[in-house]
Image 1: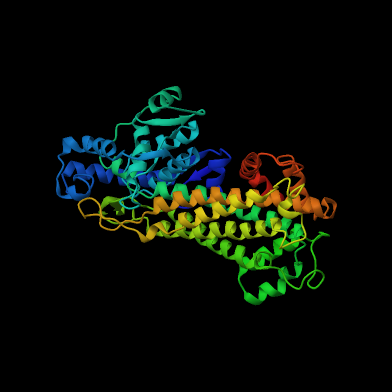
Image 2: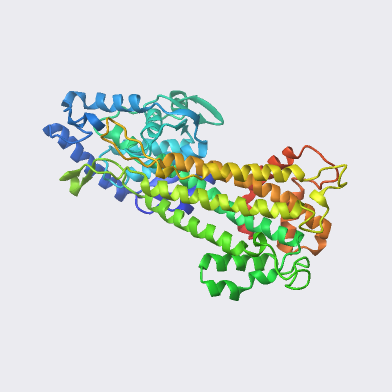
Length: 501
């Protein structure tokens, strides 16, 4: 059970809630702060004070005063008008993450919502009711307004949800779970949608998958080292200590561990003096990716516990300030960095694939074919990998360098962070397919060299993966092999990481 406080939710806890189905509970101390800020909102409405989003319109309409009798209608109109996202829905796991992060942010006690709003969000988590939220439509500033409006609809019994493997009307799922829809009151609609939870939720899921994929890339690359009889000296600790990057040192250490008892790696001068960069520079390249991942992790864990609403209420409501914490620039930069760093894992992987299949670069059978010439073997697998890494280069173009004004130029600089996070997730999917291709080719090369000579760690991987993709004895529809290997990597990566193979 994870206790939500609004202050210290970690990526490790988020992973347990999202992927392991762990339940959450609300911190009573945090709820007291929520009650205090809510009282401040009610006092503002009662006294007729002019406060943005509570007794005024939104964006360019901030100078329009709203009468006391219209504050509830104001919030309902806000959700209805802003729920205009388009395109395919976010993956269900991302939708679950949005609900989690919105509940956690509201628990900070700066947003002025009633406790029941947070309780309803937690009810959705417990019941596994996840809003259907279109992916496109957010500028990444003023909050992820369109996506989060679709989340807020569900609390009203409107819109659609993922529920028990189906996409159904929200009210149907709420009724089955005994959850009563809400009527939003002053400030609550704005508090639900004025935040960075769409880009952050997408970023959290992307990061968790990227982290696991980075570990897997090392195991697969270790197997390629064996297939190509790579020189283990390049992973010597002294080399990497001499440069001084902690992540580079750690990558080299893991490779030495994976390959410690291999009979297929070589020493410098035995077959060749030095390897190509795609083998020799693995610690430097993968280590740099880990540096980026650590940066992204730091920013996500800050944002997961951030107050990104506007306005924010401090000192029990005595200080109410309009602000710009909803601006997604910190996460936009992090997502662009994530895109580039993860794409590089595929770039170097594709070069290793080329070395595995190109007869001019190794003594392995041409294209790892069982009958070179009559059968093409892995020839077109390399084409696919090359296509995917080229697509990633387009997707890796930074979204954060773009901005376009909105709301009659009131909101004149935006982050595009949600676009960046979505592209990061697409890149991760492409990278996983490239690594699946490398795994298939590396297994074929290792089989040619002699599976019995493999290191214990890589042989364990090989044995498990051979249950997914059989040896290449004759040309077949390799698209199927790539997809089943990709699915297996995605589903089994947590287990593999725990096994440290």
